[in-house]
Length: 159
Image (tube, rainbow, N blue to C red):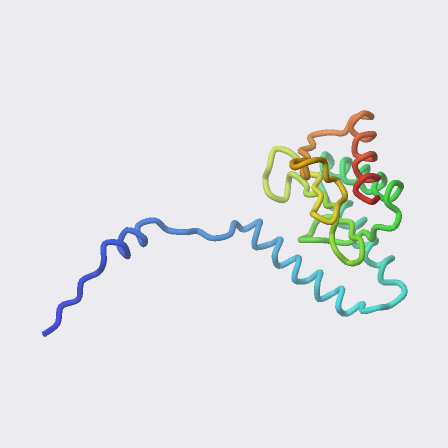
């Protein structure tokens, strides 16, 4: 008769449980899947860009006041300073794409229960400055100076 022993590594691993993604992260992934399906259904229709921008504006309107005010200003700044970028939803948040790839995005504080919203840039943004440069910015509110800096960043990223 054979006896089986459980390895200490296995029992130690089961003692620490991995919860996986948070509910907010799972919801964001589900939203992204819906966005991809909707985009595929739209195909190459001429009004695709208008529909995607309408989706972004509607998502911004759903946000809590503090996030909504910031998102509205960022949307206006991006449209004014990078008119070639296409607004679209990305993981349920407003984003702006060049040639179909997200370059800039806004993440509201409420969605991930964070204390600040985030304005971020992906690697398609032309923000390179030496060997190290910022690609994400925490936002609690926007001042005129902040808006000027964001406009400058967007113009540089779009260049």
